[in-house]
Length: 216
Image 1: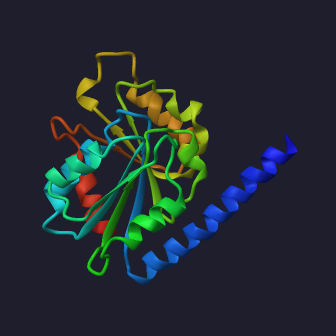
Image 2 (image 1 turned 45 degrees about the horizontal axis):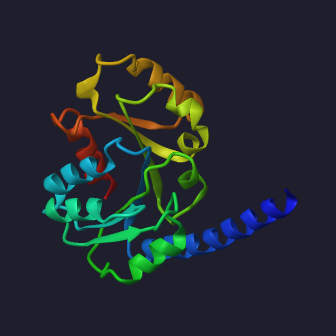
C-alpha cells in the first residue's frame, strides 16, 4: 500500500511541475484557460459548439478535445467553426494530464489566442486530481443525472470554480431537483458560480457568453 501511494505522489508531482510551466506560459501570453470536466454525456462538446457559434468572431479561441478512443468531439468542434482544435486520444486513459496538454500546445500557434478550452475526458473522478495548468475548472452536470452528483464526487466540485447545469429543457422528466443540486454543490464549495443552460433550446446560454466576454 505504501509503495502505491509513493508512486501516485511521484506521478502527481511530475504532473504538477509541467502544469506550472503551462500556467506560466499562458500567463505570459495573456491566455485564459478553462478545463471542462463532467461525466460522459453532460454536454461539454455541445456547450463548446454553441460557444464557438456565438463568439468565434469576437474572441480568438483554441480548443483541446480529449477523448478515450475517437476524434469525434474534435471534428464536431471544427465543424462548429473552431479553426484551432487539437484532439488528444488517450488510448484508454480516463483523464488528460499536463504532459498531454503541453504536447498539444506545442503544436498550436497561440500568438493571437485569448481563450483556451480544454475538454477533458468524461469522468468526474480522475480529472479532479490532475492540474492541467488551467485558470479554472468548469464542471458540467445535466438534468438527466442525479442531483446528488456534487455529494458523490466532492473533490471535483471542491476544485471547480464554475458549475454549469445543462439540459434544463428536460427538467420535470425525472426526479432531478434544481434547488437540491444547487444546495448540494454549494455545500461542497460555497464559492461556486452556477449557470443553468440548455444547448438544445439556448436557454441560459446568453449569461454564459457574457461571463466569457467579461473574463477575457
